[in-house]
Image (cartoon, rainbow, N blue to C red; front, side, top):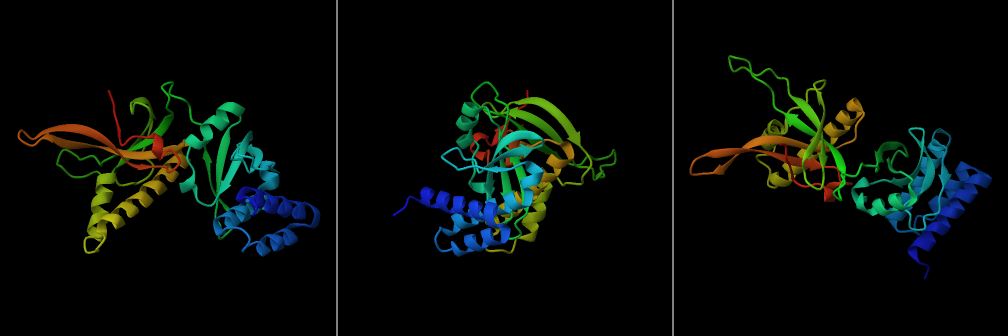
Length: 275
């Protein structure tokens, strides 16, 4: 029996050879006939590669690559810079640590392109090229959600905003204050959690529902903030006062990370620290 990687590469080579020789329609016809030959995730992955190439070849100067363990489906130009491109329909299964050695050895930057397997359109591009923090970790940009302010009468101003900071993943320390974003009305995390909790209070599995809804909210907020700041925001957090001594009601300010991008979640702790 053929090795799965050998089978996949053989069908990929044939698909792109037919595309080059006979055109798009026949390439898709051949690939559709392989639906039962490949495992379903592999087939959808190969279709995503074909969708990406046929839809964006000229725009990104794409050249197909035979993946021999380098996690590269194409070479091309994203943001007018040469890079290796890994195509996927589900970025949740991609992890930054799997690309580190490849990038260090080659000196070539990597980017992940996320394709919608239903529409065949590109949904997102994730840049894997993070600065090293010189302590064995990376420097990540995080959005810290700030609650609304109150006027002198105690009335809310309805002006939540976000601080964008850079942190060292190895220490969790804030190393740079990037900017504050006041353009969007994005409720702070505690407010959003209270809204979600109220909406799901009668559900049997409300804890799971609440966590899923919060993740969706913060993932979309991170995308919005990334676009508006031209940064790659990979985490969302908030600072809260927490009781550290029940006897005296002594409190401490703690900054929790409530959402992490799946690509970097293994490299980022649950708290960050400011001094």
